[in-house]
Length: 76
Image 1: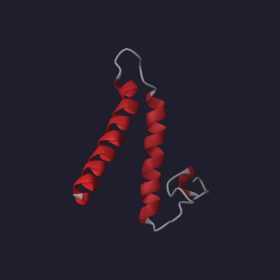
Image 2: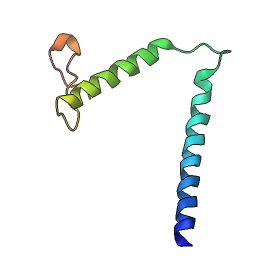
Image 3: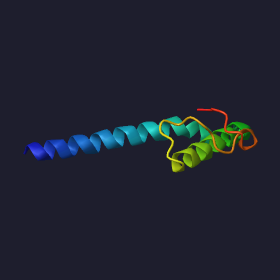
């Protein structure tokens, strides 16, 4: 009986956070208001830099490997 309630609470928590994520992302899918694509490109570039830094075994992240012509200035 107890495992049934744990299972339902986990499902409820998952559905809650999934619906919260969808609600927060709805404005980005609007066709009425144009999105700022330059902002998305900057965020995507930093995500790629962070992934390549993690592949270099940097933890915590300190240096963006490709930023500033490869001079390896601290960015994160």
